[in-house]
Length: 272
Image (cartoon, rainbow, N blue to C red; front, side):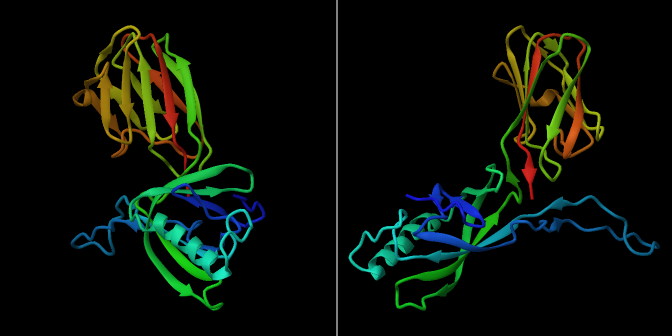
């Protein structure tokens, strides 16, 4: 297989490269657009207009226009005719698109980084066959239930030997995110982490034994203290999610009633 590095946008879906001699992305719609907001402002009797209410990003669609060629992925004609090769390429795509379940949609940027979203094929439209089966054009619509694409994890690790320890986390993405996993290693009691940038905090009113782990998953809304469910001990403030991180640099302050051990914070940065 040959990946065409000169393609304006390189994409893969479900592990299938969409930038080869067999199939190539020719146009992209929606990838850099903001998702619509879910929710609305509330009307109040006797007051003009509406009272502003908090809103969240809704799901998002990305459309890829694909050109299906009559060569195989390496640039050769593996079948006896162009028509057979083009049809084989098309049906190979359809075996991936036809699963109708979330798969990894990956976008490769010019700086060699990549961003990944979980997406589902919801439509294949604008099918064009102007060369009697020797090449095809089609538009594939992907639904992103989570509207953002995510870059490489940002990991911040530090010892927490005192009652207050500051850790710096740099969010390289473009929107506020809450995909954060907090891994405390004991001994520590009642650890709290506060984002000094937005004032949000999450704490666990538990005691973590020496060398044991407290895992607080801010995405899944779970907490495990040495494997035992500790969700009833979680307190948080400032957001529906346990803790959120804004783009740019911010200080995460770790406090506890009995300091010790360490913290590893793993953050998945979201991008539009």
